[in-house]
Amino acid sequence: MAEELPRGESRTADLGGPVHWVEYGRPDGGTGGRPPLVLVHGLGGSHLNWDVLAPRLTPHAHVVALDLPGFGRSEPGDRRASVHANVAVLERFLAEVVREPAVLVGNSMGGMISILAAARARDRVRGLGLLDPAVPGPRRRVDPLVAGVFAAYAVPGVGERFLWLRRHRQTPLARALSLLRLCGIDPDALPPEVVDRSVEMIEQREDIDGMDRAFLAAARSLLVVLADPRAYRAAMTALAGLPVVLLHGDRDRLVPVEAARDVARRHPAWRYVELPGVGHVPQLQVPDRVAQELVGWLLPAAQPGRGASVSRSASSPV
Image 1 (cartoon, rainbow, N blue to C red):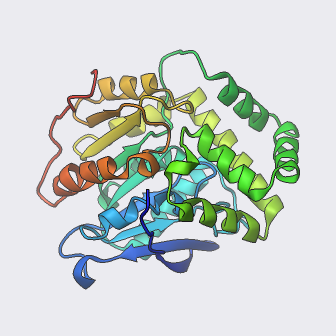
Image 2: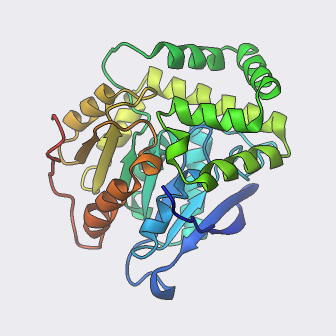
Image 3: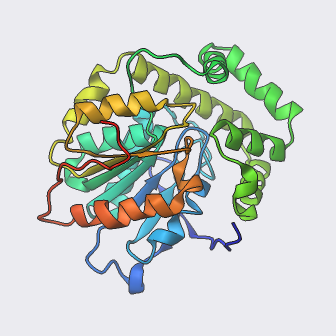
């Protein structure tokens, strides 16, 4: 892939502490009547996760991406970084920075946070794009490597030691590459800037211990939400009438496709698209297909006066 990726314009907002966000551009200098599109990264991610997708969306929408506290360039400070704390941050971001109803696009943990925020602040959300979101599913066989990693994260003391050892035994480049591979991505298939910018961010982080605490707080709270998903499922039900598109890679090791299929069956009004051969971060692997769904279906469906329609992709088994 030999494309040159533009950098978005970095900004910072005070939302109970500094929150870094990036503005990728407005179509024709304005929103043109289209809703803004807010991109929400997953666990261990940042605004950089959207560098390949964002340029494909900027001709059609006002695209922004935030770094949740404890991730990317949002230093954690004394703030909590649990899922529910970050839901509150996203709500404030919509109210104080975006200031008009927006379409949320969330990947992994960012999908979970987007669902919970949309259920709590329906008047601020016009639609949802869920890319391999962290969702509960039927009992299933779990990938052994993923199960081992998250088991380590879950245990106090063990998780901290695990992150410390990884940081001291791996170079920033090795850490960036191993995370991409865990997500099912071949680093050689990405624009070099994606890897270079990730390494640069790892090297420039200031509050390393705080970042580790934030990561583990987010990981542990995510596991709690999934362990007893009743409130989470109620939030999904509360989205009735909101246009939602759920895209999921069938090679996702972190959130198995069976979980997405189960959620799609429970919510037949959502558009479900299964992506063959794709892992956990489709916006990096198949950005054109993701942009096609967002621009071709979600953005039009999220216009005022337009409702969600029942739709199933031909590639969907449900």
